[in-house]
Image (cartoon, rainbow, N blue to C red; front, side, top):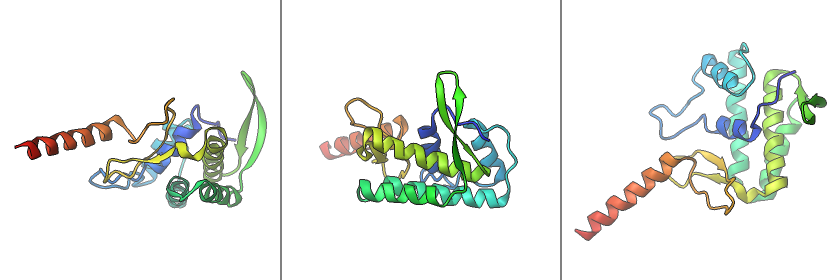
Length: 177
């Protein structure tokens, strides 16, 4: 049984963002070592991964992205539910310091699929699908879940927000001259 990461929404978002158009080579899950590093960074410990795991992680990334790029909340929920239906992971309650929590059992990629899809479904239930976004800083295609109080987030990171602001500033200066 794999431990649930401290921030499962961040895990789901980070997995989707392993494809980054701003990088010279957009594929950030280049090999099994990159997948192992990603999983270790997100609390899964040093696990051994195979080429099959890598392919499944990339497929999962694309399936999760569908929840962010859906036309509406119903389509997003359908996409995420499809991920859950396709996994062999099983939820179980286990004792945690502050009560009970859901832990998933099964093969590593099944656990990853179930936990990321479920946490995004919970985010939709708790805060609404309108909190899901794709970065407005084209060509960036990274995703985010807006946790701001005023629901105003438009960019995946400060880097993209600054990049767009600087481009707008340069355009205004050029137009003024």
